[in-house]
Image 1 (tube, rainbow, N blue to C red):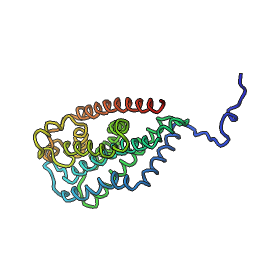
Image 2 (cartoon, rainbow, N blue to C red):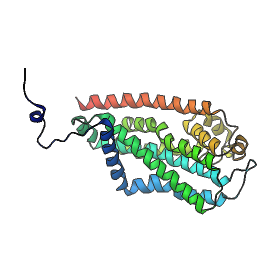
Image 3 (cartoon, helix red, strand yellow):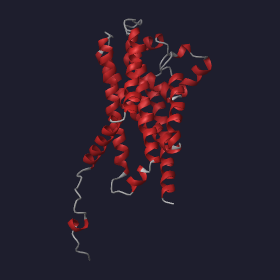
Image 4 (cartoon, rainbow, N blue to C red):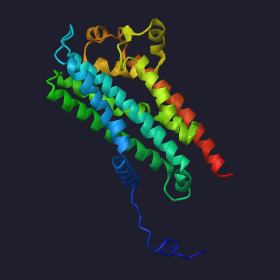
Length: 279
């Protein structure tokens, strides 16, 4: 029976990292700092949705729909949805793909840090930046005198912030099923048409009929409906240019179903990448 103590087995410079929560917090801080120092991430993912809202949403402020909802408020829902989904695609997808291409994930697997902390840190980081995008948009809307029902705004903000996790599996699937150098191009190729067809850039009733028929099968469409339905009554959502919204359970079910599908793809892709590294 070995009598070697734990102190002797550990490296002299090793420090216990404490609980799982502390480990997750450390990894999340690392992710925040890493992206904060990346101008392309801060401008393209965080600042761009706010700029788009200032350009296209603020001019609509003061135009009131039949149920009393400001069009500027509905436009905030559209641009914030665009920002949140973009954050998920590029924060979970492109970033992880590039780190995989650099061999970072292979190095992490050789360390004592569990991989759940790596992926969990990405999720916490995305929640933080999603909140920053939403808060920045609300601040711009307030400067532009957009009228909001505060209760509805709070509910829509919660859907937006936590909605970034609804598209996390899509991002991770992209990360493990694309070549790292092609991840950015494929991310844009997938995301921009989804956003367009779902009515985030252009009202659905103005799209060709074939695209209107396709939209209800897309997760981005249902996420947009969840956000708009929190900002205004069903009549105003229709007047804003969308079909009559279904129940929240229907929209939530579609988003959850797509999350599960992409989660399976992401898990299979991760295992595939792991097997390749151990050959």
